[in-house]
Image 1 (cartoon, rainbow, N blue to C red):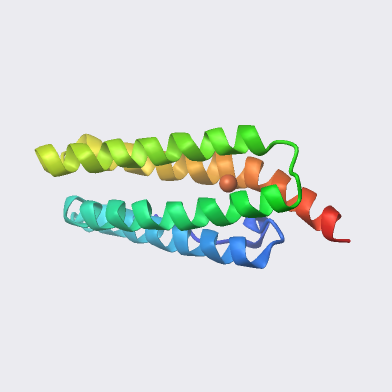
Image 2: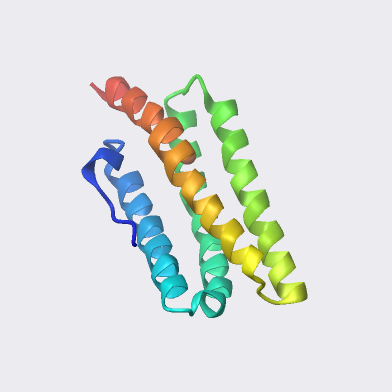
Length: 135
Ligand SMILES: [Fe+2]
């Protein structure tokens, strides 16, 4: 059971949508690897990708928010910060102890929450705001 990009996830800002597509591709690849019994082997690579990806992606989103004086900037920033913290903690644990099953579960949970709670809600509100601001 994979996870695919769908139009309803679009926030209407092309650059951000493309970055979200990329995130989903990696999430889907992790789910595929888990199904094939290769999840533990793939996890470290995915966490390294996420660590780099989130920095650039969140910076881009936050830059747009400052540019347009987005009213929920602080709240959005907090959500980004908690994702970064969770990824860092997972990376540190995996580097120290090796990949355990609970790391896979936690990473899947983090990505799922990012998709359902953040992209579908916080980023969607941002998209609506930016599209109004630009017209
Ligand atoms: Fe965001």
